[in-house]
Length: 287
Image (cartoon, rainbow, N blue to C red; front, side):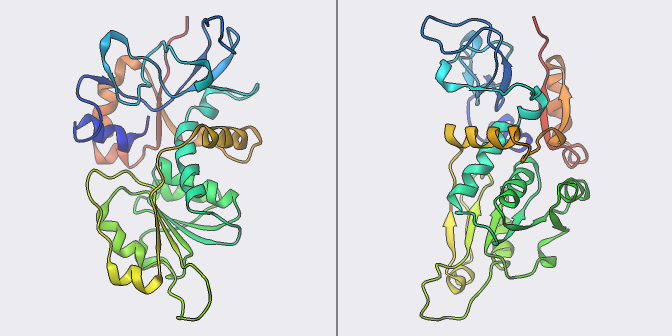
């Protein structure tokens, strides 16, 4: 699950009508398949969630024990990778889509704002692409996790230098945009063809987002709105995990029992819990 998005959905302000089945991604094993299925029984796979049971709506549709999905919609998990190592792959692929849309390049100075689970993943992916990444978050625990992964960190945006080639905003908080925009570089006006810095809205927003026109104009900012992820993004991040270039299991801060789902969501709605939570998954009983 993605705590931020799913808590917003739980408040009925976003997504499916209640009742619905939430959840971002599933890792499990193939139980059976039709004649045209390209998978073998017992293979470990990743899938985005299948048909909901009991006629319920899907809110991304991950949190159920059994899924019925087309075989071409799943990814085969390479041998040797645990469920914990790959279960956040869908979230990683969303951050990857932002990196691709934002045209990441080696040597770029990149500021990732908001180090929740998607922000952590974005920081790692842009860093892997060769960017010089700084992460900003007010929560010490999140900064510690990013620092342990080799990311430079600052406690707030006022501590960030105003010379970044790209800002990756993972906060989902409209109030952040004006301050984060000022962290982008502002070059002298010349006859060159430099397109200017980039602002990537990687977060999920409930409503409209406003930008400070003069700040954006002076910097010739390109705004990028990445949309979810593609199967190509999901394959790319899974390949990075398999190659040992992207670690996800340390971002999985809670493995819960499905029977405790109500308590799990209730706890996440409390700031003191949410501030120390990144990725959350439910471990379903096998058999």
